[in-house]
View 1 (tube, helix red, strand yellow):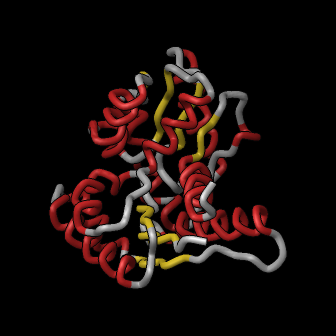
View 2 (cartoon, rainbow, N blue to C red; view 1 turned 60 degrees about the horizontal axis):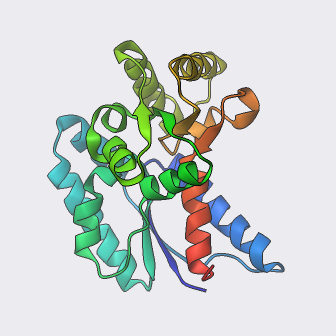
Length: 231
């Protein structure tokens, strides 16, 4: 079994989901007392969040590059960044280490392509929804059209992530607003919706809507397990 390197803490609420998914996946595949071989570096998200909203992405890249080198030194065979938004600096992080980086957008887009999805809605932080580092990778690499909510909906989705979900708060009122946004994306032609922030699955699950949801945390973890087990 290969050792999975995970950069977590962004936020730690979703890193818990990664840890559980990776270990449960390995146990399901191998049985018995098996669990994932994992090297985790968990950052202080307050520092990252401050730099994100200040637009200082170079400084966030420096933090994650240091963390990635530590994980590699710790014995990781490949690397996950356990957050969609911080894949904005994925090229810098990948360049800082010699081990491969399993990109969350690639894993998600490949699953969409395999399922025949050609137009998809995207929920995430404002950075992920507005900037091209994520949407562009899916469209250019896989030919999938990406739809995002309107400006007012952007604000709601972003605020719920940072001021509720990252703090471990799951509110029914916010779930209903998210479900309304998901429906509006379907009305615009989305065949499915990407939960493109690792915290969103804490709020919205497939049981809440008939619109197919693609949980990036679960997909990323599943692909990591395949790579770790040589499948």
